[in-house]
Image (cartoon, rainbow, N blue to C red; front, side, top):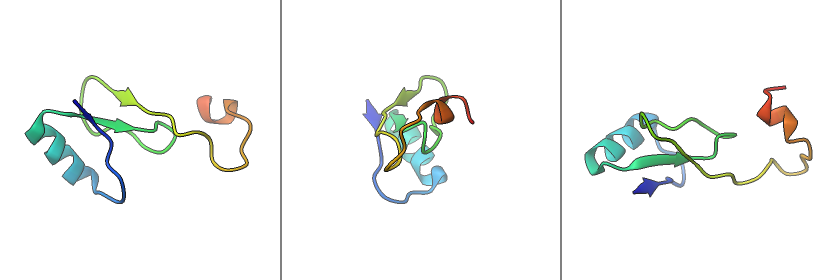
Length: 61
């Protein structure tokens, strides 16, 4: 099972919940990093408003 939290949660709290329930933390990789080890599940929400150049985000430019 995968969980993508909404709102402001601490990474510590997210990690504890995921470990206790044996679930994978889902994140938008442009916004943050997953806190669960091993398998990662990414969900893309799109670029920031007005941004058209995805290569800046993919290559860290």
